Image (cartoon, rainbow over all chains, first blue to last red; front, side, top):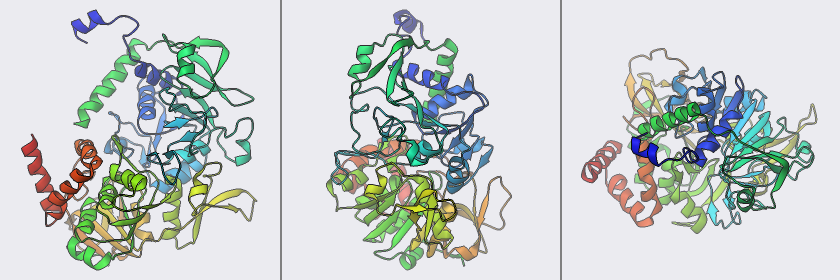
Length: 265
Length: 286
């Protein structure tokens, strides 16, 4: 950081809300877990975790790279950097059948285009399926990650068009219609346990399974979170404040992103 | 047996109008040279099958080769949308495109069933999602032994399977290493198989995680150096990340897309000519 930047940066904006989100998400990942990682924000958070408090985290990417240790963030799910230092490289059927479906994955780490109050995810379409307003990329690996990972962490930016009252399409199942309605589906995974956003943290109510605001990142307010949510967001009785990013977390995250940016060119 | 041929001959003989065609390569080893040759030879009414359509199917759809797309994730990895794919689905340009969409696990298992000569595969997935409502090739099934409710997906047996690999040997065996994706299943499930390779060698060297597709599983092999550009070939060249970014504004605009394809793909004889053509343009732009 240059001297000029240091002078003009106050303590409260010494990091961005995106950085806070990634750091908060990385902290959710415990050491030594097997984590099935989606590309983009999940991959960024998982690799930050691996470089900080969770060096033993075993990262699995759907391209069949097991124990991936990328030194820059992959832009695509099958970048060479994922295979380079991996413990093993297997075929796509093998990673989905023998690893994910077989129950070897502790944590599924997903992003989302849209999410509802029960943690169901849409990555397929906005508007009617047959005449879409926006055609999104589709399912990819997410439906089975949401089904079979023992638990799921979701990371996405908090916006009204992302946190919606009703999804146009359910691509990946969270708690379906809440309560115990997920259990009827016969999945082996427990479903999403946390949603990390750029404003705070949402966790499911133990009974209704409705996602509830349980923590705010420094500077964010309940009003902001409510405004950015397309349904009447429930707020926990006690809302905690996320610890701001530690200097080391920021340093490692920024270094990771700088190296990635250099590799992109 | 894997006969060494030119890509022009291989496509001309083995890919017909109306065929179902699977060009596979999971981010790695995407058979771009073969996709371009199919566009050059103006194949029409194809059923395109591919887990991640990527830029090659964006180009084939935009050039009017496809009637239908069977897929599981249609984006430009690390960049955003596939605009030709979206334009076809959202606005029916250049003509309407039927879609049949699955998850990656569903597609992978469909290829496995196809390669195994079974009519369908089962998996634990899709239940509770809206995918079975829009995709008729997903149906519930009960395990005859445990009574567990699972989902069935029909086998994929493409008329033509096309993959890119690093090497072939003189006998027509094919070596693939690095991320192997769905390459083996795409080839073994298909009725006819075309493989493009970086080079032909006397003998393969042992490498970690390498697989060898025996010659008996291959119909034609064509040597196409850099034939997976802008994706990559482990041991030969890296992914051209800048190209994926540069594709976004080209693919976004119908006129610009058409002009670009006419200049660089239809206006060149082969993939080597294409690579030279885009290289020159970069020099001009730079």
